[in-house]
Length: 402
Image (cartoon, rainbow, N blue to C red; front, side, top):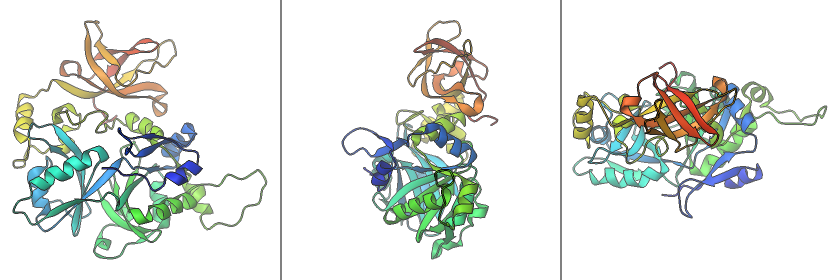
């Protein structure tokens, strides 16, 4: 499935650097940066950053049996899932491999499945094949919806300033002021009803938005207008703006994938198709207990998941590694870099994502798949970098403090 951003012309005018997501001519272009990575990252940490996410997709499940069906096919327990709540889950193959990493967003008359774009077609066709007698239906919303996000401590302030109450059946949910992590609501922004759910993947408030494709330009422009402080020559007079007070308070910046990627690695948040993927088993992801219920009934691939869980082991595990500076220098292992054990007996893993982490003292941190015997907290590993080897230590959990 392709999902070209309707905002590409606007991004081009802003000087965005873009790159394709996936392979082939139909791969959507994703903004990497608007030219000032430091400013984009700072906005995410102290104000808020607005991101365009054409690499994400949404499926819609309707019908009275939809939650019962999804509960019997996905890894997460969905019993008791009430409207305007969100649960994370895996959709597995028969062999227990992860076909998709899902966000299950329940609304009064429908359930949305938010997925990686590259997994959307596989998920749509796979789930549809299992609908037999159930009174439900599933369809892809590519071309009908588009994904945006606001990340940063002032994002809620900005969205609350521009939003109006939604209409229709989905207006009964919580307001933005009560949107805790794992909750969803519907708000009217620039005349369009937008589904908003909260997921703090970058170590700060994260507001994920599902926007009607016909209104994404208006929503994006309104957020920029209301939240971004205008740069003016020193001493120049500026016309009155009804958003000036809001903008000075929230300090919005349009941002690209690069700034978000730094922040989510700092936060220890793994991403499907980067840190684990379609060949991974749930036990290898580092988020097993966040996505999989071990008390629910059967689901596709359960036998393999349950057997590995009962044995208490997997061949490899996703961990977070904090690297030392060497003589005051930061040596950053690149994605795909080999990790060895401290004794130098051989490779024990690979780096899946890495960054220099400003909020952690500008040290190198990485997510890495390592053999389970070397996944214990405190284990010292050595990564190869273009400037030589660097020592790192496995942390107790992916997310600091978790």
